[in-house]
Amino acid sequence: MENHSIIQGVYLVGGLRFHRDSSSFLEAIEHAFIGGIRLFQLRIKDELTDKEHLNLARQVRSLTRQYGVTYLINDRPDIAKLCDADGVHVGPDDLPASEIRKIIGNKIIGRSSHSWKQAEIALQESISYLSVGPVYGTDCKKVSDAMVGTALVSEVMKQTNLPIVAIGGITTKNMGPVREIGVNCVGVIRDIMGSSDLCKASRNYIGAFNISGEKK
Image 1: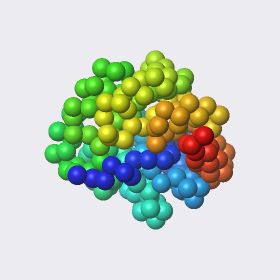
Image 2 (image 1 turned 180 degrees about the vertical axis):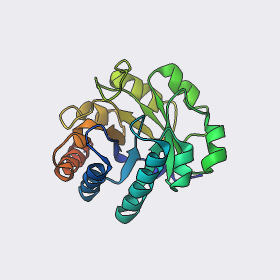
Image 3 (image 1 turned 60 degrees about the vertical axis):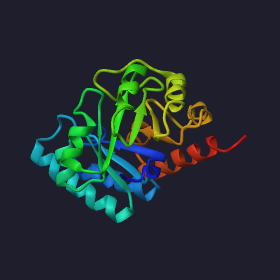
Image 4 (image 1 turned 90 degrees about the vertical axis):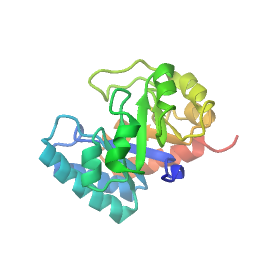
């Protein structure tokens, strides 16, 4: 099975929402990688055709190899396999992990959860990590899930040794309570992808993550 220890630190999730085209997107995430991001998920929904999606995924794969970034694809195990990504991230209603493994083998499988019930079901699968959120309010989805705060994240952490990714509305200013409960991986979209300087934003976010994780 894959090494779970790579799911730690700052986990950047990015797509085309904050960028006008694939070229500007690729330039932006390269700046994030220069800024220190070492875990990245490509999240494309309906903005591209499958052919365009695969082409972009392969270009991102090239960049992630160049900078030593662990690379996952959102929702699409077929795209993940074809571009030789390190794994895939899926939602609570997507294919079971057992079926995904038939496509990508022993690569990383992450699953999202937005409630205790979803987390409980997910933890019975052969997943590599579980994301829990949204911790705080966020509008990075067309249909927003209810805010879960840190309580659900903390409760899920007590039930498993798998890496838990806290995600949803986490910024440099509100990261403290998330780190205080012991989470060692936080997902971020807007606070970095929505910045005009992704290198600086990445460094600031990573700095806040490290500071907020220091023992008091």
